[in-house]
Image (tube, rainbow, N blue to C red; front, side):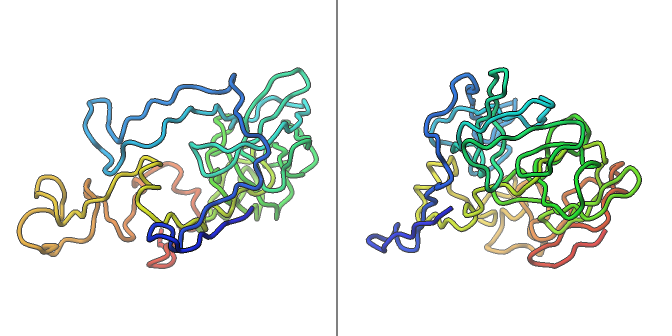
Length: 283
């Protein structure tokens, strides 16, 4: 992993940097694992814009990722590490002993030629191997963690992410997530050993608006500059109107709860996430 910082030859280059993607060893994607990707530009099925500031961007094709890791007890060789335009993490192309190829999230330290395996039984807890949490020793870093057994990995899939397995008791395993939240998941849920690679993704400085346009991000309009029927901050004089900061749909923008009340899994959250602005959030 390496970051290149540009010289300040222009205003757009000043302080800008780029990820060299030094982990990537394979340039062209596997055609059998590609799918068309239709862009909605932030619109719902009615064609109405529900997410502001989306649109444009470079054309992409979706890479089919194996989040379930359910091809058990068959060794797979890493063909190469690839760049994926649809996510911050890199992906690894696996070729199984029977010839089938699949993509997985590439963990840190996994390189071409390595061998990984997934199983419902205990296997060597080395980087890239997948098994139920009940077979994984405590203290290890995990990623691509299931929240429901068999449903596929949901937690810790972004670049540099991992959760720490701290305790196993009864039916539940306790995880410390990157947000600071401590929660329990079923021991039957599968997880992959190791941290997600490409941790330098967080250190890239965009530098100019055009690079965001390449990624499909349009300019952001302040809510206070909108009409009263477009945004809670809009309308009237140049004033917030005494309302707490919120987004276009009315959700609190600074520290408000975004999790629905009364979910059955509330009892599985031991400690809420940690906010950069307000510290530890309360249950």
